[in-house]
Length: 289
Length: 336
Image 1 (tube, rainbow over the protein chains, first blue to last red):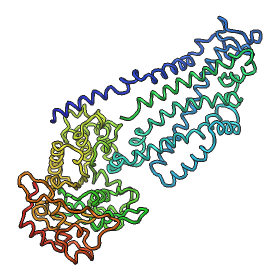
Image 2 (image 1 turned 30 degrees about the horizontal axis):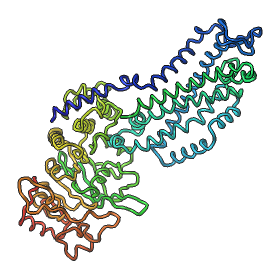
Image 3 (image 1 turned 135 degrees about the vertical axis):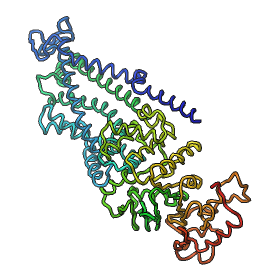
Image 4 (image 1 turned 45 degrees about the vertical axis):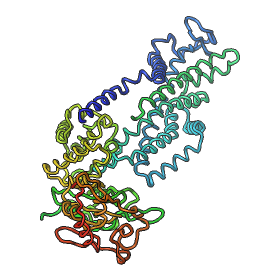
């Protein structure tokens, strides 16, 4: 009997060792997402190596030129190299989006933890704030906030944090409400562990997965927000290249040079697709057993 | 007799519910001496688990201790502040739960879970705490602790998980361990191993146990004294030997009679008729009277006090002599 139990335990142990690192390559969405995103990040990181022109370098003699060996994707109305602007734009937009997701992620997670665990007035106040923020459409609120705060990346971070934390707070709060009724929390309390320890060492690792998965799709939202702001002239300020600004600039020539707006548009779609696949794959892989 | 490690007097736990106040525990009193094992036995809903949770101040949010005192190692838990109570938990009194799968953190390696209390509560270094965790795992009979310490709870079998739970309960050197049906979720063979382990630990480390179970055989195997609970009240207390051989409360008698026994073929394997009362609408008088075979007219009105019988025994039955008589006619052995 005991021997049989040992054998079963052994088998389970082996089964689990085949965890994340043994399963990720068999999850198509994860592999797809990582490949797409990996290529984009790699291109953004290696931007100086794979471009021949400064993205801000104007060349009015060769404006609106078609693709050539010197300008792979042609030039825009000011003669700037579209390929360089695309790659450097990826740099800007990805960096801003990843950073912009970090603040709401941390703040929302913390607030969600506290609200879910302590309940009472903390929960009441949190819910009230969440409802106030959720009452506005996401993009409208962000655009309004950036408009008030003034254009620029700092405003983008502040606006996205003010609006974005609610999603994380809601996700984590819900998870904590379920998890805190589990016996292991009671057991930790029975062991005399402090609230802070129970919150961060015991509850957090159990509830964080959902927030991480959401963060992946949240980056997509943030990229779209940044691009939208750039398009409206409220985002990253020129001469720093940015996909939103590229679309806006190309719009004027849509009838004659449709590719000027379309190329950054396609880049956005591919990035979003990569991130969505990654989020999907992560959700599969990180699902608690 | 030395000073008791745990002294509970007139403990009352009430739930505030929308439909009214529910008294889950009503005037429970018992003592546990150092190194002693006390069993609390009763059906589900009899208040035994709530009693246990009240002892360490871990009641659900809607429940309150409304009367009585709990004294652990000379400290009044009911009067103590939140921090003082937390101080006692783990160090003086710890707890083992029914379902080891849910009582262990699923995303933390078991070695770290055992080492946590020594680091936080005893102030050991990481390395020393890890060594202590391995030592504790050996103590509770986990073979190959070095490898098992790296496992997650779901990689272990039920028996192993309960052993880990026991190791965690022991990790900060408590004097008293509260066990909430620790073997209910396990196979019978594993159950026996765990009970033997708890018995060994009690003898060798001198820890006291409070053992909550609905299983009389489990209580008989591990405890020296027993308190029988029914509808929130302690209805009978005494040594396991005395109570199980000669119950003085018809509820205890009914419980013992309903245990199947291989050695003695019973003429009647009785079950207690009816079901436990709803705590919101308790019967007047003795709470057991609607199900009692010996019920008399005066059982139906007026609360029945706990009657001291001498020899450390007490019962909440006016007609306890009838139980004794019934047992003399047909002994209960109940595999004890």
